[in-house]
Image (cartoon, rainbow, N blue to C red; front, side, top):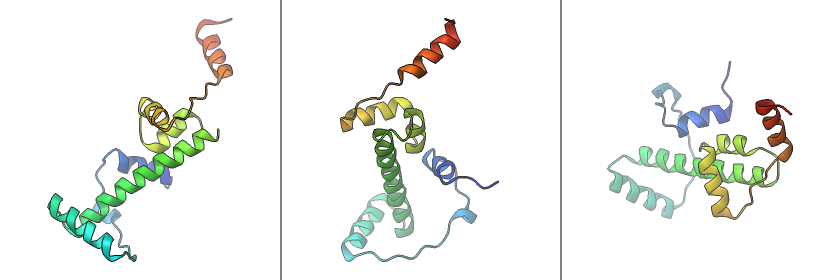
Length: 122
């Protein structure tokens, strides 16, 4: 069964080893400034340009997934647990992200009542 994009991305977020067979060639256009910055990062990190590009791409993907999860949570499309999962962070970390963004926590009182009923009865 094929993995979902988010499941695969979560594995990347949590640092699981990526097999060489999973690395694919990608061609794209970048401007001169981007190359200069990439080369500087490569030199500072003492890694080749491809490794530097993969590192920066991972950072960008993680940031994108966090922003997307925050936006979907803010719009009420997903729960805080699902948002944290999609952002590849713990729920506590996602609370911090929401706080930093000034986004109020949405509390589902009916879900809390149901959980209390299940745990303690009427």
